[in-house]
Length: 48
Image (cartoon, rainbow, N blue to C red; front, side):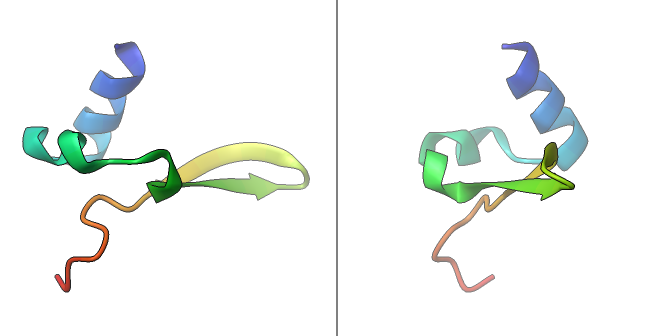
């Protein structure tokens, strides 16, 4: 639950967008072999 609250607070994702998120929409970002962040595609397949 803490991870969801932190992600929502820091990214501005709308509450309804969580229903459509899949694991494939999350891409890890690594530097020198270490995980430093992740990229979340919130509205996958939407033109905007």
